[in-house]
Length: 512
Image (cartoon, rainbow, N blue to C red; front, top):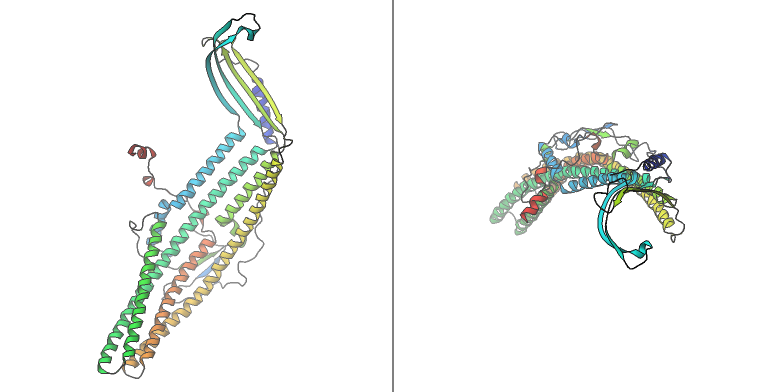
């Protein structure tokens, strides 16, 4: 293609206009919010060392390690190979985590698209040919004749919008902030998935323990019911004693059935977390006795929490994005400068299309200043400012919620440790009392109503003790999650997709 000597002027103008990118951008510059000026998480300080109960699942001693970092795989502290395998599977197959990862990649590509569309000139190549008829009068010639000829042209067109007031830079800034938002949304989904898996596994272990304990209690109650029926035959007890014991057995059977139902439900939930159907999932059973309670509990500084929590970082990114959009709306009120250029050739034959006499080019610049558009641009700017204010309040609410969750977890750890002590004592005393009363009943020195009462007391104490054991495990997981989960120490991506599970669109089309 022929390029005339005068065309470099267009290159010079474009290079000169690129320097405008170094000018300031209108609108407020984003300033990262300061960390809350608080010295602690709870109204009253929690003890550095928590109460412990020897030889009881979940009864290990725990103490807080101030300013300690959180390992990326904090669930490994439970020392459960089954739990590690479960989470590893979920991180490759969970569809919600995969969706969050795809949303992040889409946001990152949108940043690239905005950079390409806002910072660089748009260059296009065009070519066309045609045959046309033109009357002589169109050229000022007398007569009724006309001319029939072919016309061919080819050209390169360039358009560029000068970013005089920074509207393009603010647009890219907003897109980058949206990508950050999706990044921390992914980290939040990762933290939610891993913490839900841990707490669900603990709950499954607790239900399994309650199921086993209830089955043992039911067996003892059925044995006593058999003894009571024999005593009825010899006349040492009344019919009321027999029916009361059978009623207790039936009620315990109802509890056993409910535990079986709850165990199935929680295992179905674990299967879904791993991205599998409940009927196909191969999930190991969990037991409280096979879980190790982490003895060192990290306690981050309050000023560090806002940098660790994915939800707070996501709210901050949204704040940054809406702040940049205020600049975009402001720049839209100011003059818009556009440069255009074209170079090409036009001829009557294809052979002459690129000859020296066929060259054509053009360079143009234009300025547009909005004057009146029915208040549209002003309303858009006010709306952008309102969106920014909304993001500010959402950020504040997210920070408050983060501190509340940490405070709740710390207080729950303290009360949970003390509750396990009391629950273990209650279980032991209830069992000893029931054993004594049953012996006295067999000797005829205690009424059957007393046996019935203390059976119920022991059953309740046993279940509460198991619940207290599970609570210590789950409260520990809640603290790790409330402090951010250590995602910043993780190596590799949050979602580690297994490529084998992804269908090839070409193969799907061929099958159809």
